[in-house]
Length: 482
Ligand code: LRH
Image 1: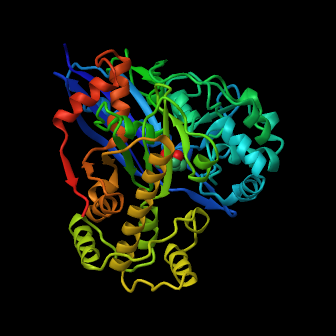
Image 2: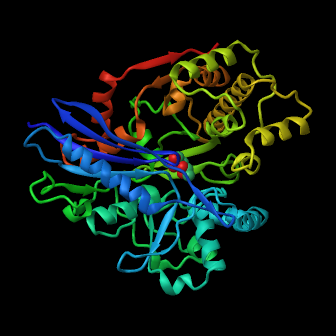
Image 3: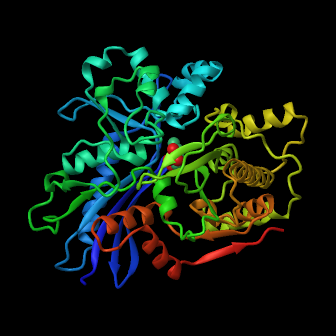
């Protein structure tokens, strides 16, 4: 068989990338053709994403992917994954009729407080959607928009979550994808369509959403005019494929999990997402208290997950220090310095309300430590130690909760993402959980995105086959608990 070329577009809250993947002789190779920073922008006390700016980067990346194709080769497909929950409201013609807020915008606070203080409503919404109340949920964001800007119901006819919107720009087809839909707190946890209970509670017009399409759906041909490239550029046959639109789902798909169900997944980046794959959702009061989110895999099964405040804590704390690591060598020195410090006796309480988006992360951390009468770190290395140990403890707690709720026993932690390169964090996680951490140096979301394209193109039989082929090639570092 001829080599197959696919492009993965992976948009994260702090950076995006376009990768050309080539599948040849049962092996996947990656070539990064474009990488760019991303950041929310604030105006008038609100936070927004620059959607046209992101589209421009996606276009530049795809042009670079085409330019990187071997002579005479064509691009078989493209797929888009992004961070969860954010969306674009459009009219039928696809025009943006409302600016896209960034999920850290504090606008959901009132709705969140109301929902969490009304126990009966919270339980009803959890039973219906399997998603706990978190400040960033699309449900709370949409409710705020409809309440504060009621004219929106006259303007908007469609709600496209970010991967859906970019798929629309690429293919001309408007569709809601299943995996991203499952992060919204609006999908029926027992089915594959929207939840009437949730739509009613949050007052989201049902016409804004259509029945989610499963992963693997072909959305149509890539429109050459979307890239302003001439005919004959190698894009004549390019399919736009609905991969799992949620980056975390793609990252999980990239993990070489064994078939015995004893692997727990940790996608460690801005957020730390701890989860596993299951045929059934985890529901009920104990799951709600543990903040279990029953996201869906692209194939429809469940992927119960707990979001632990991730390396966002560290990324933001760095801003309060004049001297920050600028390259790998300086990072390594900082981690070594942190490693020499004593183990953190009392880890931080990972309270979302305190750490989700404070004006100063260092001040927010100090405030909690003072309140709990704990000593403040004296150096940046001290904060690194505190944060890594606290994340490790948070990961371990989520794993214990999962064991209790599901009756399973986990034997290994599979870890991908930027955090997999942080040896202090990997070791802290292994120690706190009492389990070995297998850290993989891969771009998880990108690999999962490409895997799902290859499966849709029938070049790979299924995810299990892909994971098996990947396992043979992957470099891993194993951290044994100490
Ligand atoms: C990570 C992530 C995570 C949450 C958050 C909003 O990038 O997708 O799973 O959904 O962003």
